[in-house]
Each structure stands twice: as C-alpha cells, then as structure tokens.
Image (cartoon, rainbow, N blue to C red; front, side, top):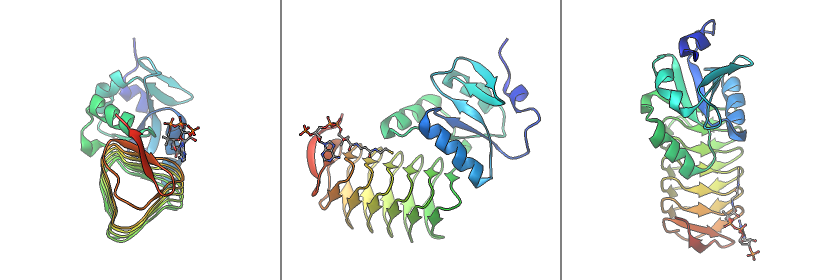
Length: 224
Ligand SMILES: CC(C)(COP(=O)(O)OP(=O)(O)OC[C@H]1O[C@@H](n2cnc3c(N)ncnc32)[C@H](O)[C@@H]1OP(=O)(O)O)[C@@H](O)C(=O)NCCC(=O)NCCS
C-alpha cells in the first residue's frame, strides 16, 4: 500500500512543508535556496520520473498524479522549479494547484525593493537586484545576479537567466525566456512566448512567439 502524505510529514517541524515541482538541477537549487530562506521545511519533490509516493533519505518523492493527496495536507505549499518557461506553465495547468498554495522562494541575498509588487510561486536567486516599482507576476524565475530596473513588468512564467540586465520600464510577456547575460534597454516590450538568446543586446521591441538573438538582437525564427 502507498504512503499517505500524513505519514511522510510525521515528526517534521511546524514550518510550512515545501514540495518542489521538478526534481532536476533547478529543483535542487530551489531546495538549497529554500533552506537559506529558512521559512519552509523542504519535504520533497514531485516529478514525472517518480512513481506513486515514496520516501528516500527522509524526502518525499512523488509523481504529479499524487498532487491531490498532497494537497489534502494543509501545511503543504509549492513552487515550480522547471527552467523552461513553457514547460513550467504546462505543469502549472496540469497539476491544478490553487494559486494560494504556491509560495515565493527567495534567497536572503536577493535585493527586492520595498515597493516591488510580487505575485506568488516565484523563484528568486542570490545577488539579484529588483528595483523600485517593478512588478513580477507568478511563477517567474529570476536567476543569479540579474538586475531588473525600475517599473519593469515581468509577466507570469517568465524566466530571466543569470546575469541579465533588464533596464527600466521594460514589459516582458508571459512565458518569455531571457537568455543568460542579455541586456534589454529601457522602455521596450517583448511579446509573449519569445526567447531571447544568451548574450543578446535588445534595443527594439521584440514580437511574440519568436526566437531572437544577437547584438543588436534580431528575430531568427518563430518559436511555436
Ligand atoms: C537562442 C537559442 C535558444 C537558440 O537555440 P537553437 O535554436 O537550438 O540554436 P542552435 O544552437 O541550433 O544555433 C543555430 C545558430 O544560431 C547561433 N546562435 C545560437 N544561439 C545564439 C546566441 N545566443 N547568440 C548568437 N548566436 C547564436 C549558433 O551559433 C548557430 O549559428 P550557425 O548556424 O552559424 O552555426 C540558444 O542558443 C540560447 O541562446 N539559449 C539560451 C541559453 C541560456 O541562456 N541558458 C541559461 C540557463 S540558466
């Protein structure tokens, strides 16, 4: 007979129990960030590579099919740690976890100004700077050492890869992927589902559903 989530959580601390969706490299990074944050007890991972619900080395390992039984335990909260923006969004739609059960996992060395609007389910890495008036919606990843300048708007499921610079008042559409080390100058908009290649310099608005890269960044192909 399979384990129940109650059995798995028995004896854990009174902190909310964080279940990380995605057990790949980014999932492991999220686990470490959550430990540094200190607000949640990381109880384990959900991923397609697991079957049913098991415990290994004191960690819950469950398939996405087990989400409903995990949700029955009110102390469980969630974050999606999958780097590909589209797959992250697909997993969100598949698991049907209510938005209020997601939490922000934030490294203590992330600088987030007091007037930043932050949704939920975001994964915010060390040494990022998010300045005055920025809005970050839900399930975004802002990776290490990236800078998001004043009043930029980051829509849901956006991934900002390490060391990127998003200047002031930039608008980035849902499920965009901004490649490592990219620079997007001020007041531009990037349409939804667009990928900006690593090391790009973006100096013009970019349309939706394309892959663009280079310096200056040019549209290379449609994405999907
Ligand atoms: C833009 C990107 C998605 C394109 O991927 P792709 O479609 O598989 O492209 P390919 O690797 O087949 O390369 C096709 C051509 O584009 C060039 N190219 C690819 N990415 C480029 C980039 N970022 N800048 C400049 N040229 C690039 C390649 O050199 C190749 O040129 P060639 O045909 O003359 O040899 C990918 O290269 C990229 O930059 N991804 C972001 C990676 C990243 O930031 N990861 C962070 C993880 S935390």
